[in-house]
Amino acid sequence: MPRTLFFLAALASLAVSGAVSAQTASLREAYQPYFLIGAAVNTGNYADENSEDARLIKTHFKVLTPENILKWEALQPHPGQFEFRAADRLVAFAGQNQSHVVGHTLVWHGQTPPWVFAGENGEPPDRDLLLARMRDHINTVLGRYQGRVLGWDVVNEALNEDGTLRDTPWRRAIGDDYIEKAFEYARAADPAAELYYNDYRLEAPAKRAGAVSLVKRLQAAGLRIDAVGIQGHVGLTQPSIAEQEDAIRDFHRLGVRVMITEMDVDVLPGTKGWGDADIRRREAADPAFNPYAQGLPAPMQDALAARYADFFRMYLRNHDKITRVTFWGLNDGDSWLNGFPIPGRTNHPLLFDRQNRAKPAFQAVLDAAQTRDRSDP
Ligand code: 9MR
Image 1 (cartoon, helix red, strand yellow):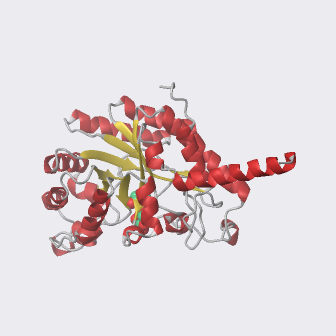
Image 2 (cartoon, helix red, strand yellow; image 1 turned 180 degrees about the vertical axis):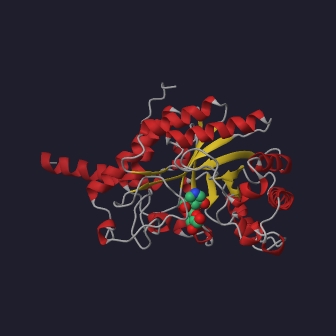
Image 3 (cartoon, helix red, strand yellow; image 1 turned 90 degrees about the horizontal axis):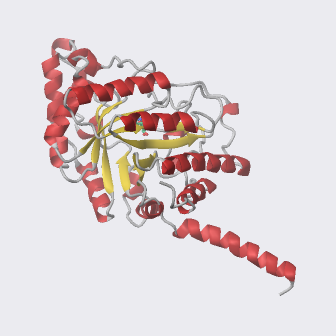
């Protein structure tokens, strides 16, 4: 074969082998020696078990977090009326696929129906009434899924940005110890389940310090907390890798494990700050803030891939502290970031595009595990 032809053929086979590795590789297997790889899923992703979405889930993700169906409003929309059909289906789907389910989430101010926070005669509920509702919900839900859910986000997003406790209806009615009570009830309801505290922007020093105090408080009360979930809604430049690594180390020093629970990388410009997943946040639309409606250009794909590679190399360095990394959504079309904090944009924050094709970011995450020097600790 003439030299140029040989060179072209070699190039073509390289390109093909890259594509094939994305199609045949498995993230969950590549990361099996280090930590669990997960994704947030919706019922539509696995309603048809033979769909491309379901195939991706089965191939790549060892642990599934339902994006919405284990939240209070989905499980107990009306007092005492529990709706378990969707959750049962997810638990069955995960079981068939040797995957785990994470329970997201028990005690949160978001996606909790108004009746929970209503007392008699339009007054807020008193401490005993709200504690009784909390305990009943936790007992019923954890009782049903005992042994079939790996762990629960017992309390979600309880902190303000300055590290103080958020003024939620839970706290107003019960007092600061609503958090201790939630962990106490959950431990009693399923002693074998892992119990977590989950929040966003825990990389920021003041909020991180608040989370550290919270964990210490629980421990001082004799309650076991197994892990802290750093949500990991990050941007292309912020937070720095070092900031998140510091947070991982700080939590690990307390004797708890760390999980990255809702990872995505926002690639769009214009929004204020990074990582602020406060559900009330809304910002004004501007066409300049939606530049990739027709697709993500190659240089941006590369920037996204490099960002994911940096994070995953850091996770691999700290794999003794990390038990799980979960992506918040299966593909770019599923992502909440298409609607937040500005509705109607086209974001590209995940590893698979809208057609479920693996992006360069997928290859970067896979390569990080496969090229890791096994002699590293
Ligand atoms: O991704 C979830 C989206 O589908 C819901 O509309 C939204 C409403 O609260 O919640 C999203 O998930 C949030 C998660 O439960 C907690 N951390 C922030 C997530 C993104 O908002």
